[in-house]
Image 1 (spheres, helix red, strand yellow):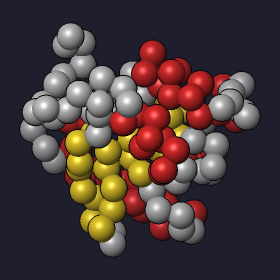
Image 2 (cartoon, rainbow, N blue to C red):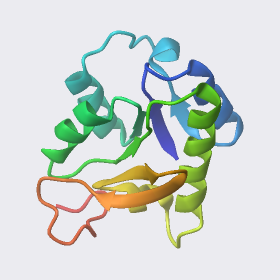
Image 3 (cartoon, one colour):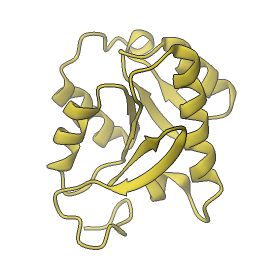
Length: 136
């Protein structure tokens, strides 16, 4: 998966995800520290990257106005160890679905009920929630 690990999270998450075969970046590693949320959103849409963050309210509001976006993994504010476990659980839940996990995330947000990841629709034009990347 292509993931953007928000700067509120450990840069080690991106390193660990890359070791697991994901294309994950953190602002510290790509010269994007201190970017405003709307700039992060635009970059992630352009790069087709799912945003992983604890800054849930801001990014849900920003992405919720977009007709199409790559998705959001919305972590609760928690310890580093639990945050890492939740990221792994979210990705695992996507990988058990049929098809490309990136397609499942389009216009969706993964939130957590306890430790269980739940996929929910999130977009301005979400009639069916079934739009795929690249569709008009």
